[in-house]
Image (cartoon, rainbow, N blue to C red; front, side):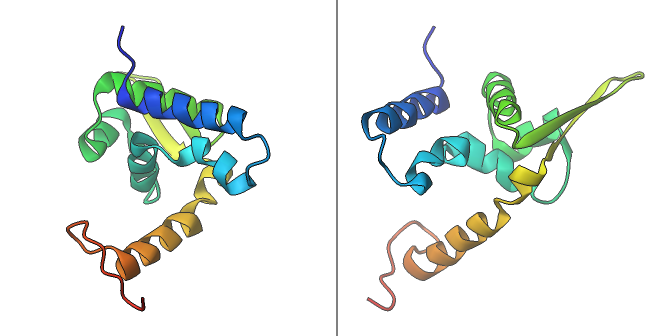
Amino acid sequence: MVPAPDEEIDDNLREARELTPNACAGVQSLDQFGTKWRLRILYNLFDGDHRFNELKRASGASSYTLSRVLESLEEDAIVDRRVEEGPPVETHYSLTEKGAALKPVFDAIDEWNAEWVGENGEECHRNA
């Protein structure tokens, strides 16, 4: 089975952390939230809880990738999973306190992006 792109990134981050054990905590923490799918999912959860299919539509992830990433985020205590019984069974995902604490990080990235990267991805080099 071919690993999903997010799994490859996760493996690369873990390998880099193992090879550079003295790297700063910021670099080491990237495997908590710093992959493409994790970023997209977390971004969508900042505005409240969502059901699986809502996250799938909003993030563009496949069902397989979304399931794997949500499981991983839940294991890292960043996302909470709540199941409501009854026809139909509904599964809701929301940020834990640890996950919600990432909001200022995302805000800082947005500010950096506005300052240094154009909307189409080209670097602006304002204030350079």
